[in-house]
Image (cartoon, rainbow, N blue to C red; front, side):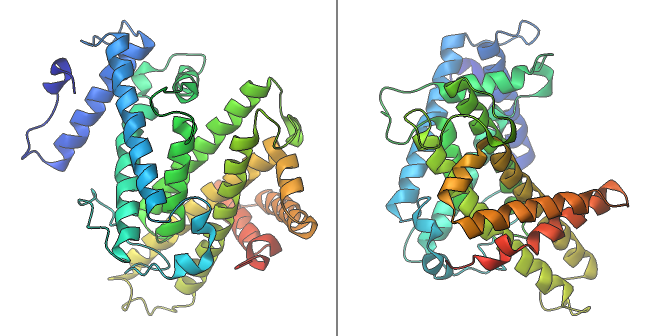
Length: 353
């Protein structure tokens, strides 16, 4: 950090709570400088704040490169055999723990998957404070959204265009976590919610790039010169979300088939209930991602998936929507919609393809 922000840094022996508080305070000062918010006094000028954002971009590029170096790119992790060979102590995925993350282990053998997942989770946790703007900085007119889109659009001459935008890198790291972590963990739930925001911002960037609105799947043609890279990333994300939804369904079935025999996996019935709720919440976020991409880039899915798979996807979304319209409170309707989608032929019928 620059000298003016170094005073906000905690001591090396500080607690995790102190570290998180210092990070959020520093991020608030950086964002205030970029947004030129007079209400938030900051020692930084806009150039200094932009240099810190540039550092975050470099860190993101470094972790994405580490991911590719170990064969864990967006396309490679779609190989079901490589995912199954990873090995971990979690339920259908790597278990990183619900608290602050430990240091990165040595990337030797299968530990490389854990090392890459740990690095991705740590980088995304770091950038959360900068990307999800403090509510005190947000004024009417969706400043938060416009702010992050402006930062995501910026390019860096030193990095070149190989990895794409900062947003593309963050989506790649989120997809790695989606493919790696156990669906009942807090980290997986955070990843699903974060990815939903990232996909929404990517769809907004595509609309701004093409200058077209996108009601009911309309908009620029898929894979044209302006959107080809983003469309490929969107499609890969949907395929990863599909696999993650199938894993969520398997974990839910496991929990609900225990019949009170929780002792082997959980320390108490309450603990099992907590993990089950996480799976349901994460599944809801993933279902919303699929729905958002279908609404904005439906034509992309139509031309990319087989006719049968696309028809199954549309049918699953429609039935899920009908299930959400039935009686009950909001939570019950949301769960009914998710269970309907998890039981759809799109989620269940195209596994290991």
